[in-house]
Amino acid sequence: MKASFRKIFTIGLGAVVIASFLVPLLILAQADNADERAKGFCARLSITSSRTDQRIANRDSKLEAKRIEIANRIDVRKSERDARILEKRAKWDANRAEHFAKLDARAQTDEQKQAVVAFKETVTAEIAARRAAVNTAIQDFRQGVSQAIASRKSSADAVISVFRNSVQAAFEKANSDCDNGVDQRTVRENLRADLSAARETLASDRQNIEKLKISMESLIIAKREAVKAAIEDFKAAIEQARADFKTALPQEFPEE
Image (cartoon, rainbow, N blue to C red):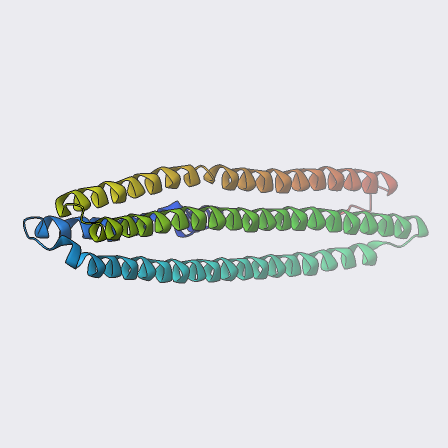
């Protein structure tokens, strides 16, 4: 889940989706190049503005759809992982119960029975402790991921909002200049410059959002280390329990 989840988070919910908002302006620039020799720029301005607004709105819809798709994929992966964990734990529980039953059958004296009871209680407690630690690590990871996703979404939405407002302001300024009789060539060049500045700001802000990848890496490392520590603590406790068990019993009563 680690690598695939990282890929989902980085690509699906990362700043790469913001790049799609650059496309409408690139299309606009190409259209303007074709019309550059023609007169009547101000007459076409409202149509160009409407088309650009529609393209941005379409990108908004696609972005939201992408976010929903990624969120659903993450939920599915969570469910699949939880199911695998429960399945493995059920098998371990069944094997352990079988092993405990064999120990109970071998115990004949009170001393042996008490040793088996103590061993079983220790093993059961340590397994519960390990599972609790692993569950906590997974829960902390998922909460961290949810917070990181929310942070990236908030940052991306803010960046897109600034971009959208900049585009709107650029067209409003162009309309005002047209109404005030500014030379159409000047209006066109000023609009292109303003849109270019909006693109550059968007690209810069997008790079800043990419830095949030660091939080994802730290979450993965923290979970990995927490699970590793839980397993190591469990192994050490079980080895000690086995040693105590063997010490408490005669040699003719092996643990296994």
